[in-house]
Length: 109
Image (cartoon, rainbow, N blue to C red):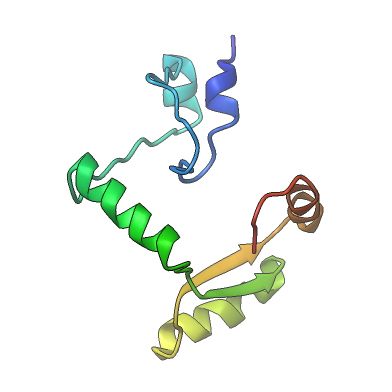
């Protein structure tokens, strides 16, 4: 039986929205789908809150380097290896998803 919480968590958790207290991954999914769980903590919760408040107060954003489709991925890798990339690289695989998220009011690429 699939856990619906596992199905919607892909990539990084969005820390701007409330997160569940607990995430359960069925053992079969963990083993057979090669699920990997990784976490990191670089500061205290209070320091994180202060950093996020500062980012919001000063409207700080990250530069984005999007490429459209897997065929353009080598272009992004070349930019990353050149040492000239400022910000983060993004490969947009599903243009329709980006369109739907924008229509729903989400700030995306």
